[in-house]
Image (cartoon, rainbow, N blue to C red):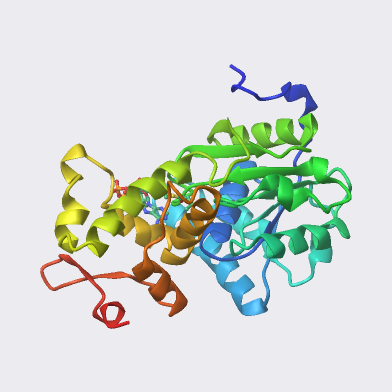
Length: 301
Ligand code: 3HC
């Protein structure tokens, strides 16, 4: 059955090579998913060789884990590893049909990356973004071919969570959208078309929920009470561990975007702002009994 809003699949282009811009938390998980499910060459880039090596190393290590669990054969493991390469030079993307960026959540950076990519890729290549909250229309606005830009938003952990939000910008054409749906299906994801609105659908709901947990703590509710209050509902993971998984910087950025768009409806925790500004990668820690606590170093900020 065709997903709601998906164009005729006959319009989809073939994806024979994939480019991934970024080699961080989400980007390296995306590289793994693309190579595993599409079995096509995947080239990864980032701002320096060390980051690229780390991203490629992550994919290789995860392929080894799949081999260890007996999910793939030794031959397939070797083939998948060979298909993933890294390059500092975006010229390596010249024959890519589908390029996805998953870099820091900054509109101007993403616009600049897409503009640079246009100098290398064919006019038909799809430019996809894993943005959590930014406008697809604005990201495409200054390009020569804005019709090939599409939102392709995954959830962490990418290998496990089935949902994929596909976002159509004002100028995205049917061929790009059809390619996005066909690719999402080949990646074995459940694709939904969502409006190009701040934080789309999932992060808008999630930010409200996580934001209220953080607000309760800011207002003096004991940390463990706020974190465990909804556990009896059977959530797969505690809200504060989820903030950690998403990354405090990303979570705060999404909250800032929503606050700008809907100031009455979304606030941003000052405590979260402070610790992200201080560059703290972690917010919570665990004591000897396995209970979560606010990291004492963070508490002192
Ligand atoms: N990376 C890769 N794989 C992971 C993983 C990770 N970080 N964490 C768990 N897994 C895998 C495990 O290897 C295991 O795979 P297997 O069955 O093949 O062996 C499988 O997931 C289940 O893991 P566990 O049995 O250890 O743990 P759980 O059953 O408790 O599941 C969880 C772990 C899937 C992370 C679950 O707790 C969960 O779904 N949590 C909610 C996560 C969530 O809501 N993410 C969305 C965040 S929002 C976002 O990403 C959008 C962004 O824009 C902000």
